[in-house]
Length: 260
Image (cartoon, rainbow, N blue to C red; front, top):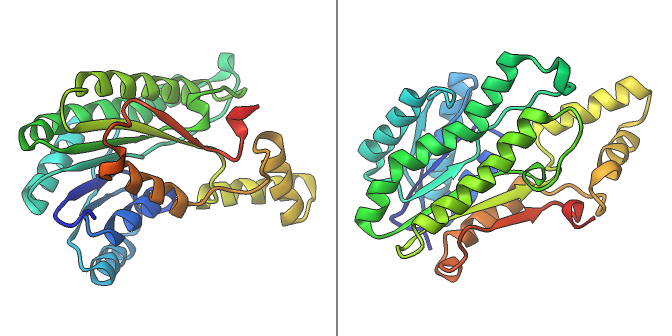
């Protein structure tokens, strides 16, 4: 379905971003990976994706907190893959603390990577999408783009802002074949969440199963994690012709979290 399309997925060396990159590659898209990690492991991942799916896979180490590096990533993908038809803004970081104790440098970093980076990337890629007459922009927000939790001021503010940005871009591209939507995951089983489960287990002296239930039970009524593969499948759908009139939406994949 996506043969001949080229995609950038930020923050895609693990977790949700990797799940999305794999799903797009499975459907024939050439992909640029982005993120931090061991260079040899990333090269192995890039080679494996390319060989498994018969697509071109490139890599950018761009730091999403720096506009110049985001612009350079878009330019690199355009040069190496020929175009950027699909942009998935997935890169994100988290930090928790009460508002009055929240470190100012952490606030700035979270806003930069979780919100400003998406704006910079969209701004850089929109002209070529409009020129070629096709494009898909998918912003990975969060259930925290729709509701709040304590001690997550920067993350919640950034994700709410990302949904606002999604709507504006959707309206500005409404008469073009370029769409912009957001996916709002709840708890997804990623290495970051695995660590949180281990922390709960260690802190409270619980088994891993009990710690998992405690984590999910607070927010996610299904008591099941969403998976990177499920998020990837939704991203693929948003790239399809069937989704051409889905514009400016925020789609929760959260086991009922935001239905409460």
